[in-house]
Amino acid sequence: MRRLLPLLGLGLGLLSVASVRAEMVALEDNEMSAVQGAGFGIVLEEILLDASQSTITINDITNASGQNVPISVKEFYLGAAGSNKGANLNPVSIGRLGSPFTLNLAKGEALRSLRDDGQFVQTTPSNVAVLELAFPERLTTGGQACIAGFAAAGSNCSSRAAEKVDLGVRFDFQVAAGRTDVINIDITELAMDGSYLRLWGDSARAQLVSEARLNLFAKTFDIMSCAAGAPNCVSAAEQAARSIYLTNAYANVAFGYGKTQPLLFDVSSNGQFVLELPNPLAGAATAAERTSRATDFYANAPRTHVLVDNLNFGGTRPGAGQVPSGGYNFGRNEISGMSFNYLKVTSRDL
Image (tube, rainbow, N blue to C red; front, side, top):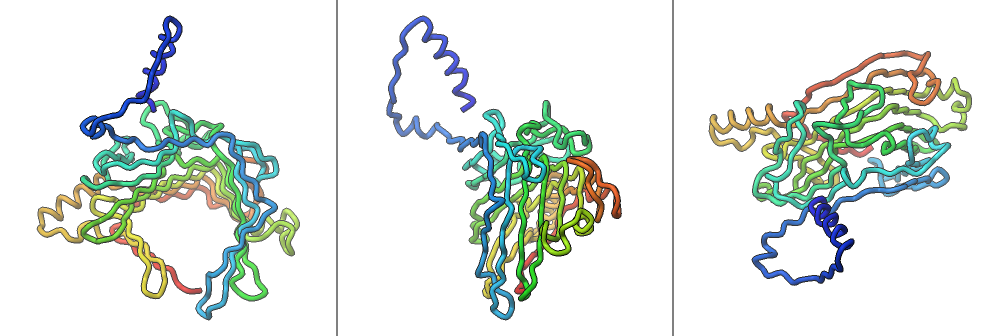
Protein backbone atom coordinates (compact mmCIF):
# COMPACT_ATOMS: atom_id res chain seq x y z
CA MET A 1 0.00 0.00 0.00
CA ARG A 2 2.75 2.46 0.94
CA ARG A 3 4.70 1.70 -2.26
CA LEU A 4 1.67 2.66 -4.35
CA LEU A 5 1.37 6.13 -2.84
CA PRO A 6 4.17 7.78 -4.91
CA LEU A 7 2.71 6.23 -8.08
CA LEU A 8 -0.73 7.51 -7.13
CA GLY A 9 0.64 10.99 -6.64
CA LEU A 10 2.41 10.84 -10.00
CA GLY A 11 -0.77 9.66 -11.70
CA LEU A 12 -2.76 12.56 -10.29
CA GLY A 13 -0.16 14.98 -11.58
CA LEU A 14 -0.35 13.51 -15.08
CA LEU A 15 -4.14 13.75 -15.11
CA SER A 16 -3.88 17.52 -15.00
CA VAL A 17 -2.05 17.67 -18.33
CA ALA A 18 -3.07 14.59 -20.28
CA SER A 19 -5.55 11.74 -20.41
CA VAL A 20 -4.34 8.57 -18.72
CA ARG A 21 -5.57 5.10 -19.66
CA ALA A 22 -4.77 1.86 -17.86
CA GLU A 23 -5.88 -1.76 -17.91
CA MET A 24 -5.29 -4.99 -16.01
CA VAL A 25 -2.35 -6.94 -17.48
CA ALA A 26 -1.79 -10.67 -17.04
CA LEU A 27 1.54 -11.64 -15.44
CA GLU A 28 3.71 -14.54 -16.51
CA ASP A 29 4.76 -17.17 -13.96
CA ASN A 30 8.26 -15.71 -13.63
CA GLU A 31 6.75 -12.27 -12.96
CA MET A 32 4.31 -13.68 -10.40
CA SER A 33 7.15 -15.41 -8.54
CA ALA A 34 8.74 -12.01 -7.86
CA VAL A 35 5.57 -10.67 -6.22
CA GLN A 36 5.37 -11.05 -2.44
CA GLY A 37 2.10 -10.51 -0.58
CA ALA A 38 2.35 -8.06 2.30
CA GLY A 39 -0.87 -9.14 4.00
CA PHE A 40 -3.80 -6.96 5.01
CA GLY A 41 -3.85 -3.65 6.84
CA ILE A 42 -6.99 -2.98 8.91
CA VAL A 43 -8.21 0.30 10.40
CA LEU A 44 -11.33 0.49 12.60
CA GLU A 45 -12.99 3.84 11.96
CA GLU A 46 -15.74 5.32 14.14
CA ILE A 47 -16.41 2.09 16.04
CA LEU A 48 -18.70 1.92 19.07
CA LEU A 49 -19.89 -1.21 20.86
CA ASP A 50 -22.65 -0.92 23.45
CA ALA A 51 -24.06 -4.14 24.84
CA SER A 52 -24.75 -2.70 28.28
CA GLN A 53 -28.36 -3.87 28.12
CA SER A 54 -27.58 -7.33 26.74
CA THR A 55 -26.49 -10.59 28.30
CA ILE A 56 -24.49 -13.37 26.67
CA THR A 57 -24.55 -16.63 28.61
CA ILE A 58 -21.79 -19.19 28.16
CA ASN A 59 -22.92 -22.73 29.00
CA ASP A 60 -21.52 -26.26 28.79
CA ILE A 61 -18.73 -25.53 31.27
CA THR A 62 -19.18 -28.17 33.96
CA ASN A 63 -17.75 -28.79 37.40
CA ALA A 64 -16.35 -32.06 38.69
CA SER A 65 -19.89 -33.28 39.36
CA GLY A 66 -20.97 -32.63 35.79
CA GLN A 67 -23.14 -29.65 36.72
CA ASN A 68 -23.35 -26.68 34.36
CA VAL A 69 -21.45 -23.57 35.49
CA PRO A 70 -22.90 -20.71 33.41
CA ILE A 71 -20.93 -17.52 32.84
CA SER A 72 -22.98 -14.43 31.99
CA VAL A 73 -21.27 -11.59 30.09
CA LYS A 74 -22.96 -8.25 30.77
CA GLU A 75 -22.44 -4.49 30.52
CA PHE A 76 -19.93 -4.76 27.67
CA TYR A 77 -18.92 -1.51 25.99
CA LEU A 78 -16.11 -0.06 23.89
CA GLY A 79 -15.83 3.56 22.82
CA ALA A 80 -13.76 6.73 22.89
CA ALA A 81 -11.90 7.79 26.02
CA GLY A 82 -13.89 9.89 28.48
CA SER A 83 -16.94 7.61 28.53
CA ASN A 84 -17.38 7.70 32.34
CA LYS A 85 -17.54 3.90 32.61
CA GLY A 86 -19.74 3.58 29.53
CA ALA A 87 -22.31 6.19 30.57
CA ASN A 88 -21.29 8.62 27.79
CA LEU A 89 -20.17 6.55 24.81
CA ASN A 90 -18.82 8.05 21.61
CA PRO A 91 -17.28 6.39 18.52
CA VAL A 92 -13.52 5.93 18.30
CA SER A 93 -11.12 5.21 15.43
CA ILE A 94 -8.47 2.62 16.29
CA GLY A 95 -5.38 2.54 14.12
CA ARG A 96 -4.77 4.61 11.01
CA LEU A 97 -3.38 4.03 7.53
CA GLY A 98 0.18 4.69 8.70
CA SER A 99 -0.16 2.34 11.71
CA PRO A 100 -2.86 -0.26 10.99
CA PHE A 101 -3.71 -3.65 12.42
CA THR A 102 -2.13 -6.25 10.14
CA LEU A 103 -2.76 -9.83 9.10
CA ASN A 104 0.42 -11.17 7.51
CA LEU A 105 1.75 -14.41 6.08
CA ALA A 106 5.53 -14.16 6.02
CA LYS A 107 8.73 -16.14 6.44
CA GLY A 108 9.97 -16.31 10.03
CA GLU A 109 13.19 -14.49 9.16
CA ALA A 110 11.18 -11.48 7.91
CA LEU A 111 9.40 -10.85 11.23
CA ARG A 112 10.79 -8.78 14.07
CA SER A 113 10.05 -8.09 17.75
CA LEU A 114 10.98 -4.96 19.67
CA ARG A 115 13.59 -5.65 22.32
CA ASP A 116 13.75 -3.65 25.56
CA ASP A 117 16.74 -1.65 24.32
CA GLY A 118 14.73 -0.37 21.33
CA GLN A 119 16.23 -2.78 18.77
CA PHE A 120 14.09 -4.97 16.50
CA VAL A 121 15.28 -8.60 16.52
CA GLN A 122 14.19 -11.86 14.90
CA THR A 123 12.46 -14.20 17.35
CA THR A 124 10.71 -16.65 15.00
CA PRO A 125 12.62 -19.50 13.33
CA SER A 126 13.82 -19.18 9.75
CA ASN A 127 12.41 -21.09 6.78
CA VAL A 128 8.88 -21.43 8.16
CA ALA A 129 5.68 -19.71 7.00
CA VAL A 130 4.21 -17.69 9.88
CA LEU A 131 0.67 -16.33 10.14
CA GLU A 132 0.71 -13.11 12.18
CA LEU A 133 -2.10 -10.97 13.60
CA ALA A 134 -0.56 -7.76 14.92
CA PHE A 135 -1.73 -4.55 16.55
CA PRO A 136 -0.19 -1.22 15.48
CA GLU A 137 3.54 -1.45 16.17
CA ARG A 138 5.47 0.52 18.73
CA LEU A 139 8.03 2.94 17.32
CA THR A 140 11.69 3.71 17.91
CA THR A 141 11.36 7.42 17.08
CA GLY A 142 8.57 9.97 16.93
CA GLY A 143 6.08 8.03 19.03
CA GLN A 144 3.23 9.05 21.33
CA ALA A 145 2.89 8.70 25.10
CA CYS A 146 1.72 5.16 25.85
CA ILE A 147 -0.05 6.48 28.97
CA ALA A 148 -0.88 10.17 29.12
CA GLY A 149 1.09 11.96 31.82
CA PHE A 150 3.08 8.87 32.85
CA ALA A 151 6.56 8.91 31.33
CA ALA A 152 7.55 5.54 32.82
CA ALA A 153 5.30 3.74 30.31
CA GLY A 154 7.35 5.18 27.44
CA SER A 155 6.57 7.39 24.45
CA ASN A 156 7.01 4.86 21.66
CA CYS A 157 3.35 4.00 21.02
CA SER A 158 1.95 4.75 17.58
CA SER A 159 -1.59 5.16 18.96
CA ARG A 160 -2.53 8.79 19.51
CA ALA A 161 -4.67 9.98 22.43
CA ALA A 162 -7.80 10.01 20.25
CA GLU A 163 -7.17 6.37 19.23
CA LYS A 164 -7.23 4.98 22.76
CA VAL A 165 -10.41 3.35 24.05
CA ASP A 166 -12.54 2.95 27.15
CA LEU A 167 -13.54 -0.67 27.67
CA GLY A 168 -15.77 -2.38 30.21
CA VAL A 169 -17.32 -5.78 30.84
CA ARG A 170 -18.95 -7.68 33.70
CA PHE A 171 -18.80 -11.43 34.29
CA ASP A 172 -21.29 -13.25 36.53
CA PHE A 173 -20.20 -16.75 37.62
CA GLN A 174 -22.70 -19.20 39.11
CA VAL A 175 -20.21 -21.61 40.62
CA ALA A 176 -22.51 -22.79 43.42
CA ALA A 177 -26.31 -23.05 43.49
CA GLY A 178 -27.93 -19.88 44.81
CA ARG A 179 -24.69 -17.87 44.65
CA THR A 180 -23.37 -15.52 41.97
CA ASP A 181 -19.80 -14.21 41.94
CA VAL A 182 -19.12 -11.04 39.97
CA ILE A 183 -16.10 -9.47 38.30
CA ASN A 184 -16.84 -6.00 36.91
CA ILE A 185 -13.98 -4.41 34.90
CA ASP A 186 -13.67 -0.83 33.61
CA ILE A 187 -10.56 0.36 31.73
CA THR A 188 -9.83 3.88 30.51
CA GLU A 189 -7.48 5.06 27.74
CA LEU A 190 -6.45 1.56 26.74
CA ALA A 191 -3.82 0.96 24.04
CA MET A 192 -2.31 -2.39 22.96
CA ASP A 193 0.47 -1.28 20.61
CA GLY A 194 3.03 -3.94 19.77
CA SER A 195 0.79 -6.90 20.68
CA TYR A 196 0.79 -9.84 18.28
CA LEU A 197 -0.01 -13.51 17.82
CA ARG A 198 2.13 -15.66 15.49
CA LEU A 199 1.27 -19.20 14.39
CA TRP A 200 3.28 -21.76 12.41
CA GLY A 201 3.75 -25.50 12.04
CA ASP A 202 6.57 -27.26 13.89
CA SER A 203 7.56 -30.35 11.91
CA ALA A 204 9.65 -31.86 14.72
CA ARG A 205 6.75 -31.62 17.17
CA ALA A 206 4.14 -32.33 14.47
CA GLN A 207 1.87 -29.61 15.83
CA LEU A 208 0.84 -25.98 15.47
CA VAL A 209 2.93 -23.72 17.71
CA SER A 210 2.89 -20.01 18.43
CA GLU A 211 4.52 -16.94 19.88
CA ALA A 212 2.55 -14.10 21.48
CA ARG A 213 3.13 -10.64 22.88
CA LEU A 214 0.43 -8.95 24.95
CA ASN A 215 0.97 -5.26 25.67
CA LEU A 216 -1.59 -3.37 27.76
CA PHE A 217 -1.32 0.35 28.55
CA ALA A 218 -4.13 1.88 30.62
CA LYS A 219 -4.65 5.12 32.48
CA THR A 220 -6.98 3.38 34.94
CA PHE A 221 -8.08 -0.21 35.52
CA ASP A 222 -10.90 -0.70 38.05
CA ILE A 223 -12.13 -4.11 39.24
CA MET A 224 -15.28 -4.46 41.37
CA SER A 225 -16.50 -7.75 42.82
CA CYS A 226 -20.20 -6.91 42.91
CA ALA A 227 -22.93 -5.66 40.59
CA ALA A 228 -23.92 -2.03 41.16
CA GLY A 229 -27.41 -1.90 42.62
CA ALA A 230 -27.36 -5.47 43.93
CA PRO A 231 -27.69 -6.16 47.68
CA ASN A 232 -24.62 -4.90 49.59
CA CYS A 233 -23.50 -3.05 46.43
CA VAL A 234 -25.73 0.02 46.41
CA SER A 235 -23.97 2.85 48.20
CA ALA A 236 -20.65 4.36 47.14
CA ALA A 237 -19.07 3.00 50.33
CA GLU A 238 -20.28 -0.55 49.64
CA GLN A 239 -18.99 -0.43 46.08
CA ALA A 240 -15.65 1.05 47.15
CA ALA A 241 -15.17 -1.71 49.73
CA ARG A 242 -15.35 -4.25 46.90
CA SER A 243 -13.11 -2.42 44.43
CA ILE A 244 -9.47 -2.55 43.35
CA TYR A 245 -8.05 0.49 41.56
CA LEU A 246 -4.98 0.50 39.30
CA THR A 247 -3.72 3.87 38.06
CA ASN A 248 -1.09 4.31 35.33
CA ALA A 249 -0.68 0.60 34.73
CA TYR A 250 0.97 -1.34 31.92
CA ALA A 251 1.99 -4.90 31.16
CA ASN A 252 4.31 -6.25 28.47
CA VAL A 253 3.77 -9.99 28.64
CA ALA A 254 5.85 -12.26 26.40
CA PHE A 255 4.67 -15.81 25.70
CA GLY A 256 7.36 -17.78 23.92
CA TYR A 257 10.53 -17.25 21.92
CA GLY A 258 9.81 -18.95 18.63
CA LYS A 259 13.37 -19.97 17.77
CA THR A 260 13.85 -22.26 20.77
CA GLN A 261 10.82 -21.85 23.07
CA PRO A 262 7.54 -21.67 21.11
CA LEU A 263 4.26 -21.51 22.99
CA LEU A 264 2.60 -24.93 22.84
CA PHE A 265 -1.16 -25.38 23.05
CA ASP A 266 -2.70 -28.80 23.54
CA VAL A 267 -5.76 -30.61 24.86
CA SER A 268 -5.25 -33.51 27.26
CA SER A 269 -7.04 -36.86 26.97
CA ASN A 270 -9.54 -35.79 29.67
CA GLY A 271 -10.43 -32.57 27.85
CA GLN A 272 -8.26 -30.10 29.78
CA PHE A 273 -6.43 -27.26 28.03
CA VAL A 274 -2.63 -27.19 28.38
CA LEU A 275 -0.34 -24.22 27.68
CA GLU A 276 3.38 -24.90 27.83
CA LEU A 277 6.64 -23.02 27.35
CA PRO A 278 9.31 -25.75 27.05
CA ASN A 279 12.90 -25.44 28.24
CA PRO A 280 14.70 -23.47 25.49
CA LEU A 281 17.72 -25.79 25.81
CA ALA A 282 15.69 -28.98 25.34
CA GLY A 283 16.93 -30.99 22.38
CA ALA A 284 20.35 -29.34 22.20
CA ALA A 285 22.73 -32.16 21.29
CA THR A 286 26.06 -30.69 22.43
CA ALA A 287 27.42 -28.35 25.07
CA ALA A 288 28.30 -25.85 22.36
CA GLU A 289 24.71 -25.87 21.06
CA ARG A 290 23.34 -25.40 24.59
CA THR A 291 25.68 -22.45 25.13
CA SER A 292 24.67 -20.91 21.81
CA ARG A 293 20.97 -21.31 22.57
CA ALA A 294 21.31 -19.90 26.07
CA THR A 295 23.28 -16.88 24.84
CA ASP A 296 20.68 -16.14 22.15
CA PHE A 297 17.72 -16.71 24.49
CA TYR A 298 18.90 -14.42 27.28
CA ALA A 299 20.02 -11.73 24.82
CA ASN A 300 16.98 -11.63 22.51
CA ALA A 301 13.94 -13.35 24.05
CA PRO A 302 11.28 -10.73 24.93
CA ARG A 303 10.91 -10.13 28.66
CA THR A 304 7.78 -9.64 30.74
CA HIS A 305 7.20 -6.38 32.62
CA VAL A 306 4.25 -5.38 34.79
CA LEU A 307 4.03 -1.97 36.46
CA VAL A 308 1.26 -0.30 38.45
CA ASP A 309 2.09 3.26 39.49
CA ASN A 310 -0.63 3.26 42.15
CA LEU A 311 -2.54 0.27 43.54
CA ASN A 312 -5.45 0.91 45.90
CA PHE A 313 -7.91 -1.40 47.66
CA GLY A 314 -11.21 -0.14 49.01
CA GLY A 315 -10.82 3.57 48.31
CA THR A 316 -12.77 5.85 46.00
CA ARG A 317 -11.62 7.46 42.74
CA PRO A 318 -12.51 11.19 42.81
CA GLY A 319 -12.67 11.47 39.02
CA ALA A 320 -11.54 9.96 35.74
CA GLY A 321 -7.80 9.30 35.73
CA GLN A 322 -7.29 10.52 39.29
CA VAL A 323 -5.55 8.56 42.03
CA PRO A 324 -8.03 7.04 44.55
CA SER A 325 -8.24 8.25 48.13
CA GLY A 326 -9.09 6.29 51.24
CA GLY A 327 -8.91 2.53 51.56
CA TYR A 328 -5.46 0.94 51.61
CA ASN A 329 -2.85 2.27 49.22
CA PHE A 330 -0.12 -0.19 48.18
CA GLY A 331 1.61 2.49 46.09
CA ARG A 332 3.87 1.52 43.20
CA ASN A 333 4.30 -2.16 42.29
CA GLU A 334 6.62 -3.50 39.60
CA ILE A 335 7.82 -6.77 38.06
CA SER A 336 10.60 -6.15 35.58
CA GLY A 337 12.68 -8.29 33.21
CA MET A 338 11.00 -11.63 33.93
CA SER A 339 11.55 -14.57 31.58
CA PHE A 340 10.18 -18.12 31.70
CA ASN A 341 12.68 -20.96 31.51
CA TYR A 342 9.79 -23.41 31.76
CA LEU A 343 6.06 -22.94 32.25
CA LYS A 344 3.12 -25.33 32.08
CA VAL A 345 -0.48 -24.29 32.77
CA THR A 346 -3.31 -26.83 32.86
CA SER A 347 -7.01 -26.20 33.34
CA ARG A 348 -8.83 -28.14 36.08
CA ASP A 349 -12.43 -29.06 36.81
CA LEU A 350 -14.09 -26.85 39.42
